[in-house]
Length: 214
Image (tube, rainbow, N blue to C red):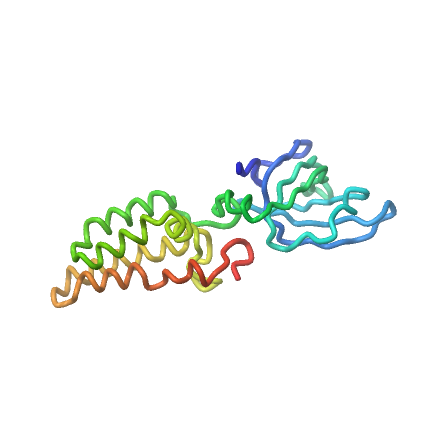
């Protein structure tokens, strides 16, 4: 699914269509009936949005962390951009999976595809032992594992806590361990590098990723 417009590109008066993450959602009451007050976010920032009555009555729950496809008009309120939502669709699991998480949350300052290409090239160069070579090939030829590893954060908040953080962190550790192995010939280079590669790999299952990153 296409991301659509980014928050940073929304200007007053614009017609907005895009996918965003819901970071705040609350119901309130106005003279004209109940309404929803939302904060919608992507990797570039956040924007306040309102769903006015009668459209607001169509939604009994808008979960925090949900991905939504929004069509809206952009205006200003107290000198800040605010969206008036004309249509909102809560993405289902399959639709959410089709959106690149790097477009919806802070991500590594380094291009994810370039880091992945570098890591795969290093694996091909370094792993000559049949067992380690077979394991790394099996793991990184798996499309689902590779995709999860590419976008997963490395932590909830301590370090590299953003999309692509696990890939960035692992590549950095792998580079360092190569230098250790160059310096200390007595090390088991293959096992050391396998440890560097897989030391945090389980985080693709441990963390939910996304805005909440539970």
